[in-house]
Image 1 (cartoon, rainbow, N blue to C red):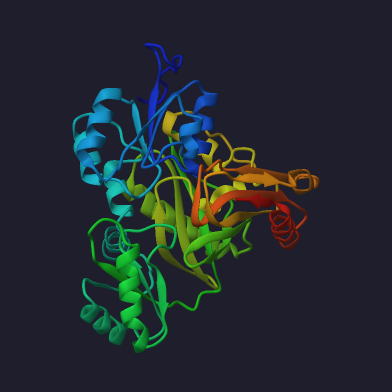
Image 2 (image 1 turned 45 degrees about the vertical axis):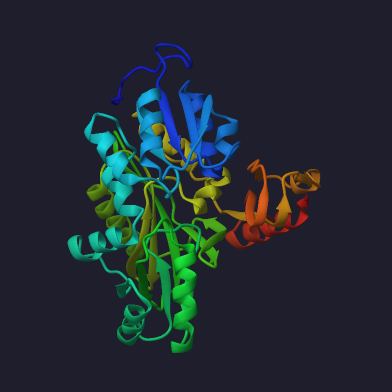
Length: 396
């Protein structure tokens, strides 16, 4: 599909078909935005009734690390666009399919590089010469011990292929190295044992800069500040106050990285800020969980922007409504029968938005929804979002 092409009617010969690889809460919002334009959507995930499956035209349940199964479905459905939404995908198969004429969003190369922390870190540091935290790679506990000697304590250990903080920990002294190594091996994806050890940066704050590559060029949303716990998103707010110098440098870095990755769509570029100095951290070639705040903060959410960009539709402007914040709704336990209550109180305050993701079950700790609010200032918005989340009652 090329920019300017017409869009047909779902479930007909004229339909534009989009296949979502991954059907979580972010993918669900993208599917809804695509269907506003009359796009036919096929959703895939590793378990039945995932959130995006509930709003797609059809769905399949497979492991997307199984390249053969993934290829069979893609060849059967012949989607015009293949849109990865998660990291657990056989990216080599995506690269093969792209070479055969399928369109991967943003590109198969971008998907391969960003789903492997080694690939994107070497690209940023060695090829693009961007400022990053000091880092070393290790494939054994012995190599991790050697990395610790070079980096010093504390440092962060992450599997090179993982998501949502899985396998990630902070090492404060030598006695914690063994535990960090073992935890990284449990949290990593597939059989790749390699980890990245990152030295600490004494940064003032970190941001996500949502960067959109579309037919009209590159656009940016206002910077998003965020709070992560155990490497996973808990809160985000927009706009994050920062100097003009730091914002300008953030945009330069984001554009440099996304220009190299190419393609169309939204990228979540994560950056560390120390005064006016900006360090590149990571980039996701798809909507970002911290970007859930844009449900409340913008006229076009990150999901609407992604849909427009990948369909080749115009993005003439992005209007920000002012200080906004989001807070994740978490629950812990084991159940396939989940009920939410007290929602009248949650939504009684003006400017409050609620999303319940519709996840069919919970086993352990899981993000089940989000509240996003607008207010007169960031602190008030954050407090309102937290208070609203506290009012949500979850019965397992």
